[in-house]
Amino acid sequence: MTPILKQFGERAAESITPEELERWLNDQAENRGWAPATKNRYVALLKLTYRLAEKNGKVRFNPARLLRMRKENNARVRFLNQFAPLKTKLDYLNDCPDEESRLRAVITKNYPEHLPEFDIALNTGIRPSEQYGLTRDRVDLTRKIITIPKSKNGTTRHIPLNSLAVAAFKALQQRSPDRAGPVFVTMVGEPLHGYKHWFEPAVGEAGVRDFTWYCLRHTFASRLVMAGVDLRTVAELMGHQQIQMTMRYAHLAPAHTSAAVERLVANASPA
Image (cartoon, rainbow, N blue to C red; front, side):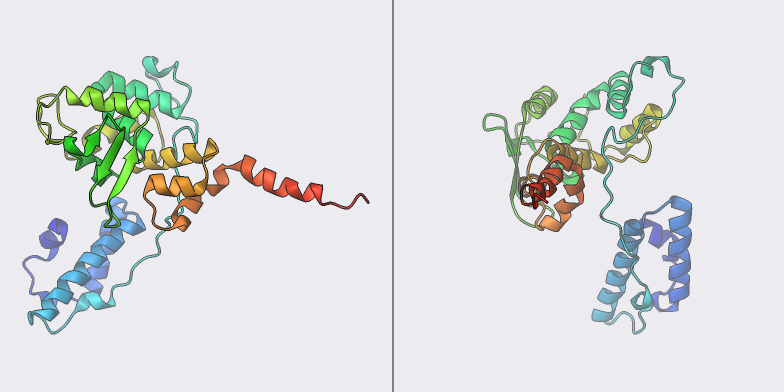
């Protein structure tokens, strides 16, 4: 809402035209490098604002009604080590041949206090909002499970922890004595609200192209599929309500698909 208010906050709501809204959205998308999904969130917010204004008798004309959502490409999959990292002039990265080793080296050198966050995201597939809203009472290291009381889909979900994730959580426990407080805190115990302030510079220095924090979630799912885990189980671990969301990773299981078409050979005619 802040950028919208900065642009239109002094205007009477009914004086703003659909053309002005569309022009501003397009300018913002170009100047700030918005993805279609980002622009759609702004369109949705404008539509909701005017719809509430109409409902409460504040406006009679709704310019946002004519705004159209852009088609989003939700099939994009980007995972670690998918590509070779960019060339670097940093000596300490010369012995790091792939994207993950590069990224780990940068985080270890420049942001070592954030390495547990990275490992937990990579080994659980947890959503960013779930991760940074997590409190210690929701992490059971004895049973090796995280409980998310209200996930993106509105339901409770449980995330199992492997040994690497458990080790990362144990490292974080030493920072805060509050057993019901936030899991992710600074070295002096202040709550962390996100990752951009350190992760984006780390990605840039590592020479990893077109990679965001959410790609760690893609990496989690991709590696499960490539390790032979079935898609139904991957969907459960990712918290997907519909298997179609998980199908974007299906092409990463070549052994499975190769075995499927090889069955035709057994039924082939001797001729």
